[in-house]
Length: 265
Image (cartoon, rainbow, N blue to C red; front, side, top):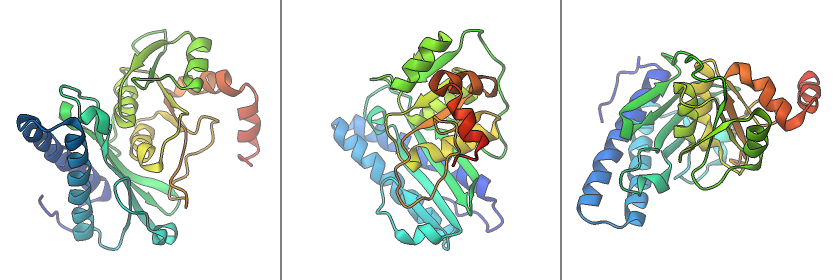
């Protein structure tokens, strides 16, 4: 790991660390598979190695910042902190432990005061990284029929409602980061999740998707709020901006507009 100068922006740091953690994970995975390691060892080793790498980097480069990591013990001091890095060192751990699967990611986001100010999602098996600066361009619409992306093993109830109402084609992937970036790339149009997740699952994907011009919110249309005391943030919507109203109408009808107009009270 190279330690950048203090002048490195937060967005540049997020992108660089997401790439470097991803490279570490690719090399570790290849090594462990070549040694005949079982899937559980590959998954556990990847989680730990990426977490330690990122924590060491933040301690060296942003020593005054708090960190909320999936693989680390939560610290209540982050609640009052002005700057909190929200990271998932290995999103899609199950996919990482399967030979040949490409749909896993590294998430790094910075919550500053009341908003996400920097974020990066790397897809190391694809040698790709997406960041808030420079932001990905909004891709052209590829089909008149919306494509909705869901998890490999289950379709959340909200996704079923939207798919039926909008007559969507279905796409399946692992990793929240991989699914959200499929929308950013234009390979899908809607990603909706209501089956439970944590702040680190959606923080970096939401930051990148919003920077790319996508609609990003809770599934009731309300804003995503991070660095709350409870790390649980159970649902997440990313979609093309022109599909936000049809999606929310399919889920809530006029109720989401009433909540929105009342300031989500």
